[in-house]
Length: 236
Image (cartoon, rainbow, N blue to C red; front, side, top):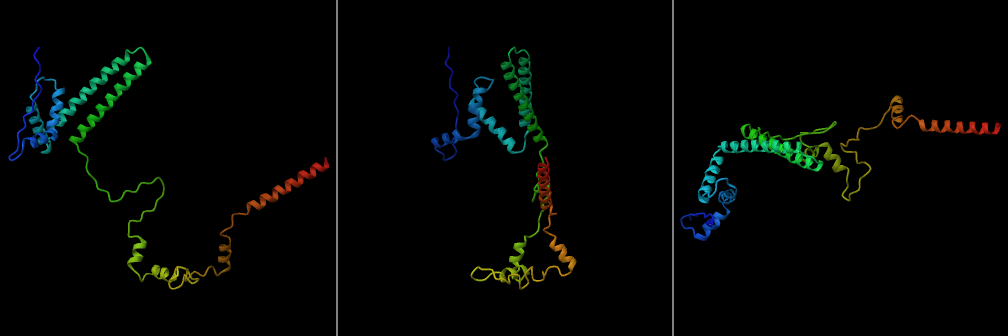
């Protein structure tokens, strides 16, 4: 029996490049390392490693130039292969006699089916690439929300030191950090807030915290029922 000769890769050094540097460059070149792996799985035996690496380099250059026909061909063939694996496993699962064997075969079959679907989606993405959209702001909420797309009030106040908000802020704080009693003076928000003046306005203002007085009425009702029960007990 003739001993098989291990595959050899012929590395051509670049001008001025040492042999060790050329070998190191070949060891990390993607097409050369992929050629060494593909040779072990290739259906054709004794494929020349240097020629295989050169072919992979040519196909990679085609992809870089925008030619994806090889990728479409490869993915289409893989999708058909995965479909064949799915049908084979599904047929074997139909003949299974035990539940664990049936479950294992169906899981593998459905996994192959999912991979075939993903492969066809990849083919569709190559033929019909999605349009890229640039969104400055996306607001997603389940209920009501408030969106302020303009300049923030704080930034406007800082940009205009003479605004009313800044005058109120500067007048509302002393140098020692304490807030004086007249913090709403000098253009503050409460300068003209004097409260209701008419009787109707005062009555409505007084009723703002009114909750209906239900709890006192319930207490009085419970007290009356308790007294009635005690009176019935005395009659008996």
